[in-house]
Length: 46
Image (tube, rainbow, N blue to C red; front, side):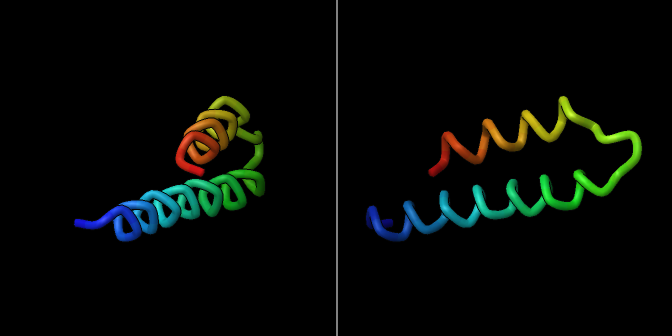
């Protein structure tokens, strides 16, 4: 696999993590620990 393909995969994974955050923000009570985890993981991939 070339670097461009690998990079795209990581960006796609990060985008899924951020989509999860958007979904979780609408839950009550808000699962802040899980949201923080997904934000942190996504930021590492970007």
